Image: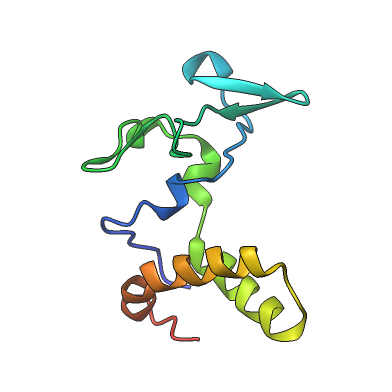
Length: 113
């Protein structure tokens, strides 16, 4: 799979739980959830480091999970699963909205289906 060029897409920075793996929690604004350190969220669900106009304010030093995340794999999985079994209708609405927002990105990255 070719490297992902996100452009101005910040969908993965919205309503996504980012768990710190090997990073020092002191370097980030975190919350402890069942012993795991996760990045704090804004009230609207955005990552605390997301600036909707300029992207990630911690991009050069973002957590490993942010560096390796590839939405193309996630959406491929969801599309396969959605076609094979029933999923919560509210979840499908979120996935459909995400797919519509990412449609241009998918075409640019040769991910039509």
